[in-house]
Image (tube, rainbow, N blue to C red; front, side, top):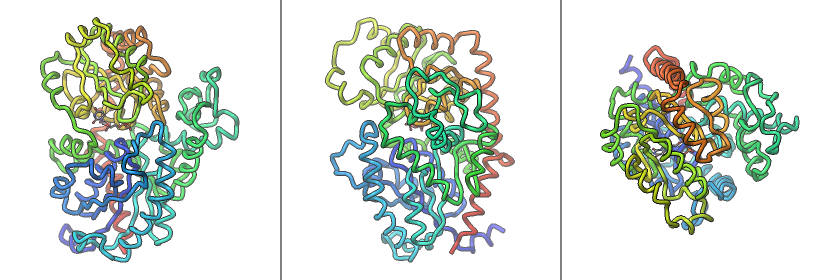
Length: 490
Ligand code: UDP
């Protein structure tokens, strides 16, 4: 059987992630999963991000059918490429400049014209797996006559909300002003009595730039032209929402948590952390692991806002006071670019002495952490998170209760699910004053609710393990994806 499969021509699939950390990482994990089953993958990054992925050669050595390729994002080399506030610049350039380049690449890969010398052995391209925020890839693939499967790296609950946004706009439920934030949302089937307007994706908030909202609406209309949708979630976590999304796509593949599925399929415990590092666009500061070793089990609150969220200096100080006053030891990721650019000039202002003292006693600050390993460390007892989907899934996998402070995109939806549906954390949406931060950290780490929350998150961690195990849903769904890709071989 094995030999027979090896003799058959292997599919060749192109993976095309949206050019930010939270999309590249899960898609690179998917690439490794496909390569592990013998499929050829051409992984296309923007030139800028291609250079930041410094461990490409090591990954290709481990997965010989993994090929990297880069393509221009059309922006000048000195462009900051920060989504906030350059989102529209970036997506406009991707659509108008990268789109035609992608088409050229597809022409050359489908017609077997080698794009580089290492591609000698590559079979012709049979499918494009594109990030669902770059649906121009569907047009490009249509022109060369190959199928497209889309990936959304967000939760199913947020994807379903995004798919319903046009209807919410039509019904006047979005955009909404501050005074309407607590009204219940009625237009998202299956989510009645769960969602308040403030829990909708951030594009539904009135001050959001209209062109950003328009972009998301367009992409979520275009995405339904894909022949399937891959989601980094698992059936047991989001089954009812998945069934709603299934009404919009011929096929749905829920194959998460991807990082855990990779570990399960390849059977190498070290793989997950080394492949996480290999997918990182920033250098991890591993000193924090030694600091964690010196802390008591379950005592540390880990704080991270992901790769994109920006803060004002006032917000940063409120968090800092709250963290110090909570009395819990804390590991805090403060990216070098975490402050809004307009605030940077104030960043070197003198820090209050009590904060310096409190941090020296109980805190550890890094620019970027090996997050998956941090969450798995026994010293970590809570996660103050921006509720990015990768972070949320990683916390579920590690069984760590969350305190959510969502800011952008799908984060508002994710945090509502964490707090109200799964009950594996608490939602601190739309506030971060020092007293609230202190009280909520204390409640999460030591309050009455902690036991209930811990039990719930442990339960989901267990079902995540089942889902990536051999008889599990994500394992099975990946098998289906792989066999569907095999039917597309030209
Ligand atoms: N991450 C990390 N180290 C950090 C902070 C974040 O490795 O110090 C990783 C995290 O594990 C996750 C990704 O960056 O894989 C962030 O993705 P997420 O979807 O949570 O948020 P985004 O950055 O897209 O807002």
